[in-house]
Length: 514
Ligand code: GLU
Image 1 (tube, rainbow, N blue to C red):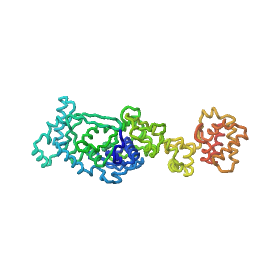
Image 2 (cartoon, rainbow, N blue to C red):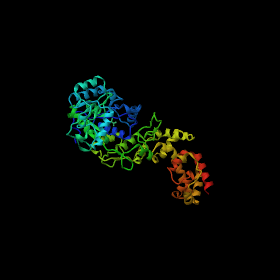
Image 3 (cartoon, rainbow, N blue to C red):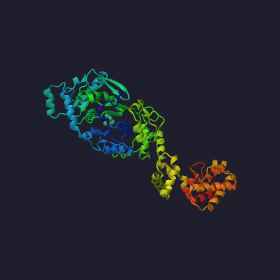
Image 4 (cartoon, rainbow, N blue to C red):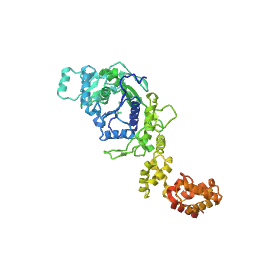
């Protein structure tokens, strides 16, 4: 493999079809393109492949652009930012594809076909009835059909003059070997008999995916086509098209990315798997205007873009070291196509949560505070931003999502109404009782700042005076203050709930637990 044999700069493209919300696998494809482009000092293009008018969904293009923006993939040229090869929306480039399609016909590499849908169905039925290996329009069957290879030229002209609908089909060679050297998969050989006479230009004058994709990759000087494995079967046809169009010398290199697999590791990840496993497969929430359905998004589920990027980068690639946490810049630095795996990548949502946990704990407390304040207010509690930031400091190490912090902060907002029975039975003894009483009295007398460090000091002094080993009573102290045997830093918890509430809780525990 040779990534640097091209004299020109590396140019890659992400070429989604706006047929609905971008699937998370599409985001990974875009990410790998982006990492490669940046690594090689090249350009990343965004091209909108919207030539299939039947599948066009309004809003999908904006969604794609917003999703790429959100995860931090920057586009150098494309629909949203412009560039020398504009327009980047295929529906606006009709004439370009038509010109190439007619050229192919003139050069004898493609032909006009006038068959109606009924005639095509009849052909397929006939071939199936005869147990033909493949019921398709190809080098053999084309000669029984209605096209410019079988009709007299005058007839062809008359039909076209009369405005009869026609398509342009590729004249696939009968017996030829088509080879391509995929950067991930190695040599892929296909016999041309396995490739049918694909439609290149449809009767509505728009190109099919294959023609538009190849023409644009050529005109936009794409050097590497990095895309999902589902396009591997189309690649030999594309190679053939490059050959026929006379562009084989500058044909891009191909890299077909491994599939994303179900959480169990067998079969392709689907929307249904996501519903069953209760996780999103779209980067952003998608509101389907037609059905009114709302599909959840990683963003709305509380994933941080950096965490999602880190997670996606590892779905099919790894740096070959132990390091798992990578910023975008570090990913760019470490990325290489050679390290992309061939086999499918299991979509493990727990790993995504783990990444989010790693990133949430690095977010500044003040950044997490507004969300905590909002959740607290929604539950009917006053919570200053200062207090919310302290709660963030106390709890961010323990959660996967910012939205988990408030629920985790129950013991801050609620005076305990029950106490853990097991802890009570094992830890609430005479010493514990004495300790809680002594601490309460010491706090009552204490007049300094009510901050964790001072509270800690007051506690240890009180225990010393009472002759109680602090280590022995800490769980009981926690039980008294929170009702539970486990939880985050107790001194900081007291600082956050404040002096008055701390005293109320200690007092209440002495009454209820004894
Ligand atoms: N428009 C195709 C898609 O939706 C692009 C495939 C390619 O990258 O060649 O995935």
